[in-house]
Length: 423
Image (cartoon, rainbow, N blue to C red):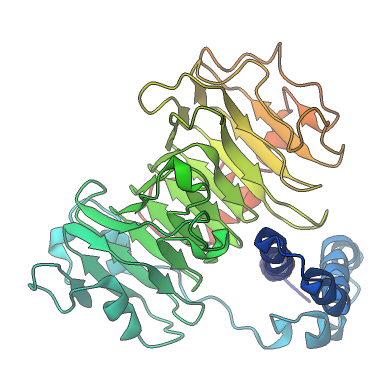
């Protein structure tokens, strides 16, 4: 029989496969060429997309019923031909997420820990750049690899690919260790590839680092960090940019005690992500723009994805004279919940913005608020979309906690990173 944890893993992997497929098509649309390549690729991907979606539906709808009646589940139902990116019948259990040394790494006194690798701009470490250090790490490492990035500004674009597992990277503080880049859409780089720092290998941990994209507001889409790392943690980090700052692309992610600044859609993607105790700061956009804090991209109704903002603070970064909204639905099943959060008056009373001006989003979205406080938290004048709930129930809010939404008790409780598992 498949355990609940295994079922959740399968749902996550299939959801990520669908997100990858959709990202590919979005990238072709973004190219905005007259070539018919988009329709050709879409047609070629049709079978793969349908197989993945059907497999996810089986896992989401049918398997729980079979489990309830104790009917044996044949793993052939989830065979490789239905999963272009993941082989469920050969997957291993995740290793113990953190060992005692890792737990100490998430405490305050990092000076007591000897890292495996050290990066330092002044030449006092093993490497001068972060990417050089990453390239020496063994692929598919089951044990934790710890990289200390000493204080300094590292102007480079870093990629930690899906083969690099269980890397922890810590800096000397989010104001001291800075990873900086400036790739952007206006200068010809697709949004997906603009990220200063990219991580897709599972089990990534970052602490005390600032990730920034300095392209500025005139360059439009310019990502500071893109993460597709399953069971990843960002603790006491900073993400600084304008449009599309933090791309929480796919899989399960957790952010705690982080600072995030930006303008349009500056927390976006289609992961299952929980942000707790973070400082979220909209900043002044260009004169003809507005601020939207979130843009969630759920495409398939069975994906276990969404943005959950819990016990955070939303207030402006400097003076913001233009309109700011909590977010806008990017796809047909977009899912975003803001709960137990302090919301400053910078947020417009209407709260949310449609993706297409003056067009109500489809009723298949799920947007809601729960027990928020502050001068911008009033829901009396919020949008009246069918898919928006100004006050969700405790049961509904409970679906978006660390425990329920990203199964955090299975992989976060061993760590000394602070987290609230429930409401």
